Length: 178
Image 1 (tube, rainbow, N blue to C red):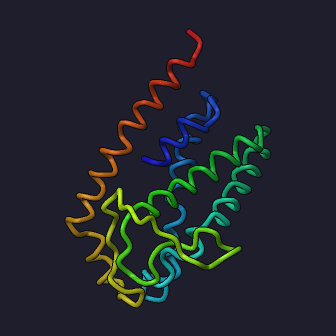
Image 2: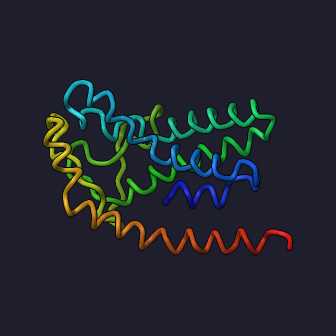
């Protein structure tokens, strides 16, 4: 939902590419969690989770990919940068305000400048549960993913982000010429 919200706020109003841009924003909002793929290949999905892919450095890299993609399509590079970087960063923001029960606590938000991890002292979201340790097996990780706690976490995020998405939709429609 954060990717949808970013699309509504930053996405260029291009009717012919609306669905493509929406999917693009959602993909970039999910992208930080692709850090489980190398871990899956090593049968320890949580091994690299919430590592450097959860940083502003990677958000800027995502923005550069978005800018290059838009430029290749003959569209404004800045629009592509903003859409991709903001969608990517939305994931970081959500992770900052959720709990983290596995060392190291938090995310390396300012990588490559620092490896220090950050986590809000205020938990606004229940957060998703994956695995208790970074060396958890794939089966343990899957059990964690398919827990009832995560259903609750998704509902809470939907209840928080849903009204924001609806407001952004309404504002976008109000700005369109009649």
